[in-house]
Image (tube, rainbow, N blue to C red):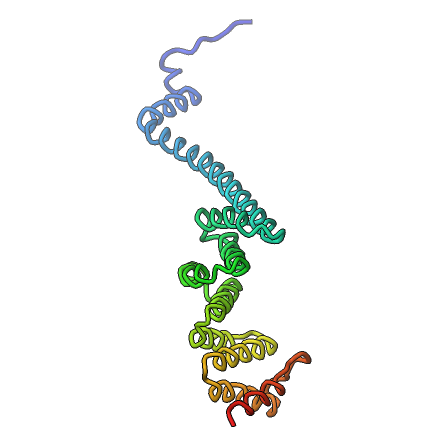
Length: 229
């Protein structure tokens, strides 16, 4: 079988050869751009994978610190609970774990009688907690409780009043209003304490709210009326 060798002229017009030449010419002109583009894609893929792993690792560490702190708190080791909770706040304060750690830390302070620490910390912690987050209410309640324990009755009454105004349930309205009234009474403002409870009772009488079965509103009203009269 005879073979036919392509001449230079035929090679010049051969489709495969022309395509190859054009391809080589394109790579020579745009090789740097393509190299950078491929490098950018590699960086994005590798970087994205690293960030995902880093985020997963941070979540695991934050959840462990919170779990460790709450476990120690539940077992009564108040001092031991504070270290992991504080680390969770410091390192992951802007996460859900960090916000919950603040609440647990406030509970640890209250249980240890460190009421000054609660008052000093809560206002700082609230800056990183959204107003509609459950931790906001829990921290405000911890501060109000600490103020009451410190016998800063006027401040405690104001704090409980704010909680009552923002309460999400009837039970909370009664609980916080009664505690507001008690703080006022302890602060020597029995008449104001009576006014607060009578206002609550008026809402009950109108059917706006229903007193919880465990409410001692009536007996408290009788005691305050006896004090004021």
